[in-house]
Image (spheres, rainbow, N blue to C red):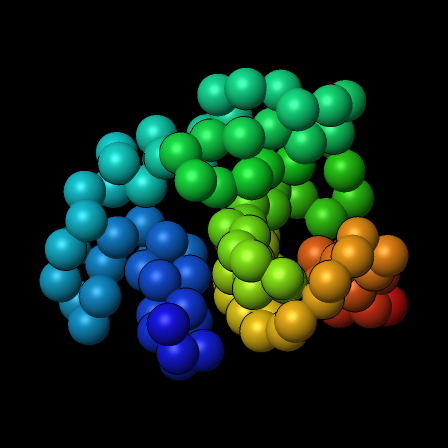
Amino acid sequence: MKTVDMLKIGTLNLKNGVWKSKQIVPYHWIEESTSPKFNFDDITSYAYHWWTITSDNQVGRIFWAMGHEGQYIIVAPDYQLVTVFTSSIKDDATRPSQYFKDYLLEG
């Protein structure tokens, strides 16, 4: 998948299923698919192919899709922000989601 296509998916979710002024994915599906279903730990939950932050935090609602070796689509609706990372990280030393939180949201 191209980076621009990942950005389109993130933007579609940010805008609650609206693309170019047309509702192409039902709003209720965006809400359902990004709402926590399974608590992974004290902070993180999993939804329908989206990870979410479940605890109260200083940055508001965040959900993200995570792919092989560091492919991320991160959506922060409170900031009207979509961020896409494409990388080839072989270990868990530093994830792009941590850079996103540390430098973009709290920087």
